[in-house]
Amino acid sequence: MVHTFQTLNPDRLDRHVVAQVPDVSRNQAQRLIENGHVIVAGQVVVKPAASVAAGVSITVDIPAPAPTTAVAEDIPLDIVFENVDVIVINKPPGMVVHPGAGHASGTLVNAVLGHDPELEGVGDEARPGIVHRLDKDTSGLILIAKNDRAHRDLQAKFADRRIIKIYNALLDGWPPTETGRIEAAIGRDLRDRQRMAVVPAAKGRMAITEYRVLEPFETRGRGKHSWVEVNLLTGRTHQIRVHFAYLKCPIVGDTVYGHAKPSLPIKRQCLHAARLTLTLPGKRKPVTFEAPIPTDMEHLFDFLRG
Image 1 (tube, rainbow, N blue to C red):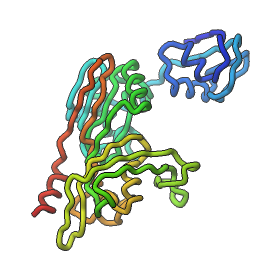
Image 2 (image 1 turned 60 degrees about the vertical axis):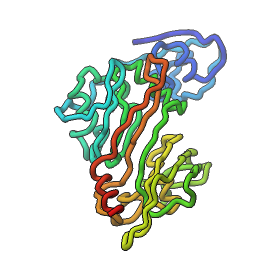
Image 3 (image 1 turned 135 degrees about the vertical axis):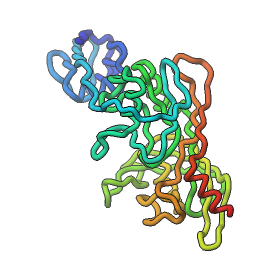
Image 4 (image 1 turned 90 degrees about the vertical axis):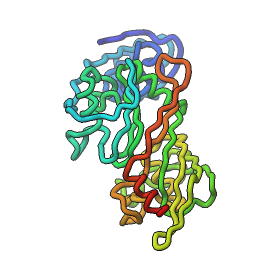
């Protein structure tokens, strides 16, 4: 589909596209520009931030959506809530969110397409319906958008921090205070590009994590541990894991940012997306969804309290 219009005021190119082309988000506009689908005064421009004067002709060629690369699979889902716009799922540990290198099948996206084939083409064709992510070994709540309107709505709410994301984690050690706020930029680890790290502000993106210790443990032969509630105010890659490692109390079972071998008998990081509070698309009042602590983490509590 092709849209042609004239600019009314000087502004960035991506803002012109969002303002004049129906149902195109800022991220979508930037991808269209970067992929060469936007012509300004007869010339292809690939910089979203390019300044465009008033009275200039812009043509946006929106390609037909490519078929999703994910295949629907009959995989059981723990659905916490569903309506015409969203699905709230309690993801089990060990499930990858979307297909990628080494994970062509068995992902949450494969399962969701098996549950609702009409999700194909919503948002990113490779990750239909996905508006945020959880690591493979992190359990808990994840939102799936069922249509493009809901996808844009939820993306905007995540970007504006209008969705409250509460996690629970079991840590190796005790944080320096019972409650705290970690403000530290996160970027690629310069020594290992596969990992993230706390970096100088100029080399990363600011990340903010609040925490509260719910229960401290001190066990003979096992040392100190703490059960914490985490309020994730930003959504950087591996943010909770990196921030607690930065405090010298990494998440139990996190062999990437913590100890090489788990200090307690568990085979994954003890991180759980426990609660989401948001206003659903088209609604006015916020709602809260909760996911119970999974069995493998409950067993650790029995172990520590015993």
